[in-house]
Image (tube, rainbow, N blue to C red; front, side, top):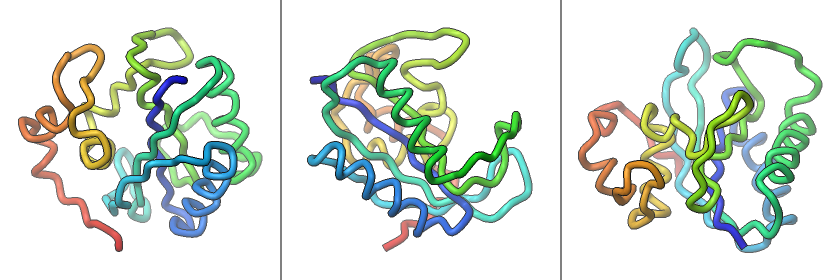
Length: 160
């Protein structure tokens, strides 16, 4: 079993769509660890604020199968919205952040995902649920990365 961490975000009916994703993930992976939800401004475009969180669970199968499952779940919630735009409003966005200690970068994905070190709305919730987890490439605990990062100065609003 591999411990995985998934970033979840939404800015279209965010609580509804995040709950849909969490329900699906909980049905498939019963022991889901969930961070608080944080509200932050849209990045890269003008749009409504995003709600973001990180979840973790143990996955018994391959990286390829998990990526396929996440894509199918996104499509199920998002619908068949074709867009090449990376930065846009979304019903749901599911990003694989970490797959155990695996390091792999190719044209389709990067593990660990670089967004961990780029965005407060990814790093902070990850630090909330896995403070002692060691980042596979930096070889530092996630909490220490958060504490030493300028990202901690970016405003995030914790949603209760």
